[in-house]
Image 1 (tube, one colour):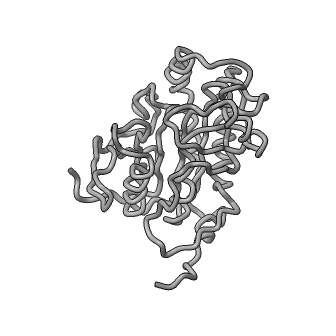
Image 2: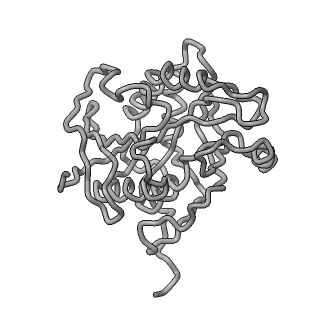
Length: 276
C-alpha cells in the first residue's frame, strides 16, 4: 500500500462508459505517459480503490475505475475513500463518466448526455468528509468542464453514432437493481431525463473539497417502462464498443480544461453556521 499521495490538479472517475477498455493506455494518444499504476492508499474510511497516475501533455492526472471496484463495499463508503484521496491530492478539476438509462423518450441508446443538474433519490444521505461546510448546489456542475465535455463529445461524434445532448437532469437511485416502471414514471414526472447511481454523492463531495465537477454519460438502455425492454447483450455491446469513444472524449476535454478560475464552483462552499 502506498503512503504518499501524489499532488495533482486533475482527476477522472471512470465508470461504465470506459469499463470495456484499459483507459487511457488503449487510446495511444501522443503526449500520454503512465507514471504509476495500482496505487492504493489507506484512508480513514478504509482502503482506497486502485488509482492510476498519468500525465497528458502538461497535465498530471489521477484516474480511478470506481465502477465495481470491489464487491461488498457500498457506494457511499467507496465515494468517501475516493474523495478523501482526491482531497489529499489537492485535486481541483474532476471529470466523471458512466452509463445511464433514458427516462426522456427523446433519448436513445448510444446518445451522450452532459448533465446540468440532478435529483438525488438515493438513500445514502449525510455522506461527508467533514461537517465544516455549508454546500450551495445552485450550480450543480462546473460550467467550464461541461462546455469542454460538450465540445469534445461533438468532436468525437462526427461518425454519427448517437447524439450529443448538452443538458439533462440526472436522477440518482441506489440500485443495484433497476427501477420499477412506476418509479421511472415518477422520476419522469419530476423532470428527470436519465437515471443512474453515480452523480451523487460525487457532485456534493466534489463541492466539499472545493473541486470543480462535471460528467458525461452514455445512454445504455431505455429505463423500465420506456419504449422497450432493455437487453443484456445490448448493454454489454454498448459498454465495450463505445469505450474508445468515451475515452477520447475524456482526453479531448481534459486537454482544454484550464486551472485558471473560469467559474465560481470553489466559492459555493461556505463555513458552517452550526456550532459544536
